Length: 274
Ligand SMILES: O=P(O)(O)OC[C@H]1C[C@H](OP(=O)(O)OP(=O)(O)O)[C@H](O)[C@@H]1O
Image 1: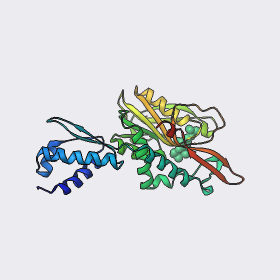
Image 2: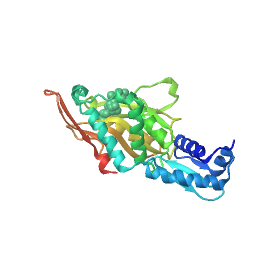
Image 3: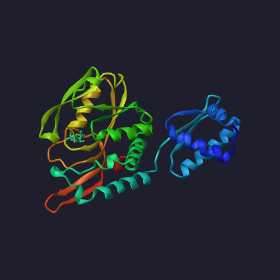
Image 4: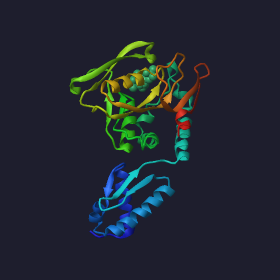
């Protein structure tokens, strides 16, 4: 069905936003709108320019007969910093203080708007790192992994701390969990989850001693896969020596005073790595 350019521009934009990191051919759009490829190319030029000016992302255009366009949800640095400051402002409230210096995050991990923002920020940072899969550990990391994986348009895999028959045969490793007073814990991942050589991004909600992220690093090695990076929403205060140092955190819990019930959450090292 032939439609006007203004309608094509809206539908093209909607389609590209729904299919990030996916090359959509000129032929596809030409058939979809019964329009000449030259008209579609002009449409994509308009969309590409607007995406950059409005901070919506990058539209990569591939020339030639098999050419097309690929939407990359790249964010402007100031927009990323703005979201990180919003997160700080949201967490800097005493009622979020939990025993052991933890900060209550679970409400935010259930809110689509926060997950969209967090997913986009992290996916934007890794947009050109050729990620094959996002990995996290059940439970609180799961919505974060899904949000990031959606913007990267890759699968996410869930590591479990308990065994489930529904996972089939698994690879398991033992790790020292700093959060549970140096207790040795187990985590496992279904053998079907990850192909050898996969490039993996680890995400999680919190990092304290770093044992959990370190455990997932060990699992990635067991699959002969490659760790591309590890990013958490917040790193907590930790008195001991962390078992991992190469990670980024959107936020850092700088200070917690249980007596006066005050908490100070500031931007983490993620900002410096932008
Ligand atoms: O850096 P570490 O010292 O290893 O601690 C960070 C772990 C602990 C906590 O998980 P839990 O609250 O134990 O588990 P769940 O996510 O299932 O709530 C958090 O979600 C990270 O995964």
